[in-house]
Length: 82
View 1 (cartoon, rainbow, N blue to C red):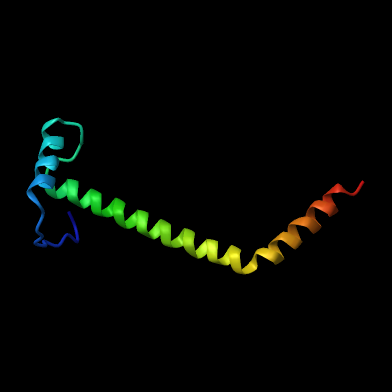
View 2: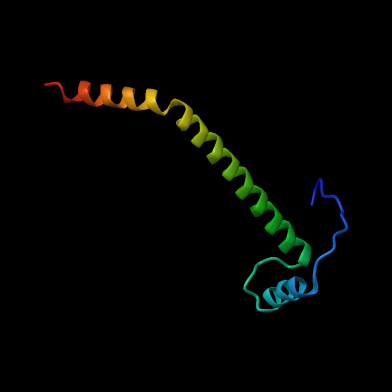
């Protein structure tokens, strides 16, 4: 638990009950609400970071698409030579 900080947050009762049900059913390996929420936040952040990286890569392909296509065609032609 190194480098952990305590925060206060507000969460709606239905979501809290869902977390408690999951924990009671032993379908998750986490032992506290904090662990469940920490894991959920980590996954959420990782998903956002991945989506941002994918968008950045799509923008690169959009802006360089014509050049990439020309290079691909040239490479295929070069490989097709006997």
